[in-house]
Image 1 (cartoon, rainbow, N blue to C red):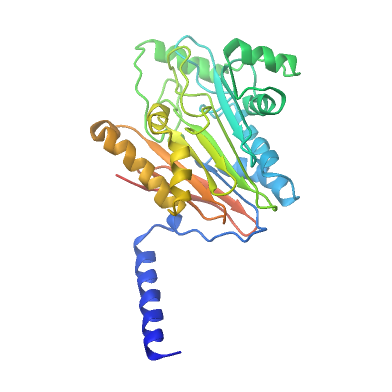
Image 2 (cartoon, helix red, strand yellow; image 1 turned 180 degrees about the horizontal axis):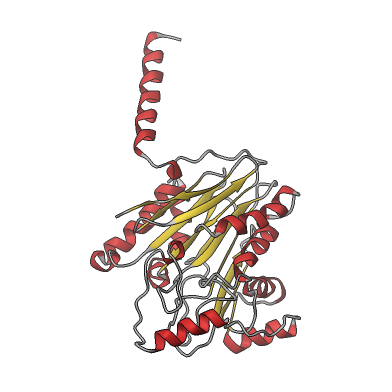
Length: 333
């Protein structure tokens, strides 16, 4: 190697090392090999969901089957007040659920304002596979679920009902940032988040799922970003996938997850793409952005993942054949 080549190689290595010293561990993930499955999801409770998804991935199953199985774990957890059974109701006392799913062939399905069904993600998958539509809402979504063998259940748990009745005393709507990682007490503070999950299977194919009970004590009929393809979730099997969590109205305004994937298409890393999406929210309304939380999570076709949020506290969970961990995303503030 010539002296000049040695100098350039050493300089590049030093620059990379210096950059690595300034970034959080979450922003410097190891890429997966072509046949190395991986699953990532939002928040700490994504760890248990990932473990379930991994059963499918480790046995050679599809990313689509994995993400559906994975997010069903928080959907069925009565102690999780942001997703499915156990979710806090709207201000009228109704637990309404939103979910969407998307696979490697651009097929997608979603349900909105679905009541009485514990696993909206599975209904969303059937919308994708059995109808000519992408979205079903309200009573129509419930009718479709019942016609396809789902059982009608009461999703309002005693704990959630107690919290709702306590909220009614003041009826003050004030979502709290990062409540997923705070102590949950009857009467507040109140959850406002979701689980988004992205996976790559052994064939190198991507799929994603997103499911939520929405903002606690929301207006009747409110729908956030979670069931909206391109906002709460987007998958492009040539490029990568993205999902989001936080105040859905702000994500919808920039079509956030689709934006992140398109930025990756133009060469940005997953972390950089998530950061740019956050900056779009800030640019649109910098004063308001300081009062709320939005986080994006993304993975590219090579298995490199990254995340970025408005505020500190946004976490995400990762599992592959070598490790299982919870990471803290970098943030604007």
